Image (cartoon, rainbow, N blue to C red):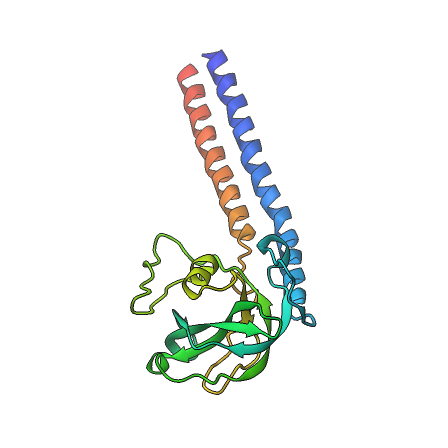
Length: 223
């Protein structure tokens, strides 16, 4: 009985130490993630540069770029909900640069009633940020290209549909009347480490309580 008591005590202390360590690790991650988000926000609002020859998600995500050229006729309509304007669509359009490259531009939001409306074309300079959104999960419906209803901005899939480079520029300025820009922000980048910290500390408290109760019962039986 004595051996079992001390074994339980040691295992309890080890488990408690692990849970507290995980909570402290998450606590340390809070300012680290905040600093990373601040760095991304500064990059988003930095002066735009020329579009890289071979942009890569790991290196060029959020990079501000500028590109001069012309919008094509085709469009992809991505269903979206705006807090201020309600349901509508992001307009994803092919953009032929003066250099001959053809990429995609997320022009911004239009209301549902304007899904099939004519959009301003012509020559324009687009200023925005490179982005490879990760919006697809098991709750998102499958896209319906036949009716031009898309439910997530999948850069590779959209590029294949438009037959352009798999490069998406999210416009941060107007690309024409009737289209509301929905520029890239850090609002979609979570910093959940505080909640994770609280979770691990709660687990530690429960572990401590259960271990203490078990030890008390074992000691009571000895008495």
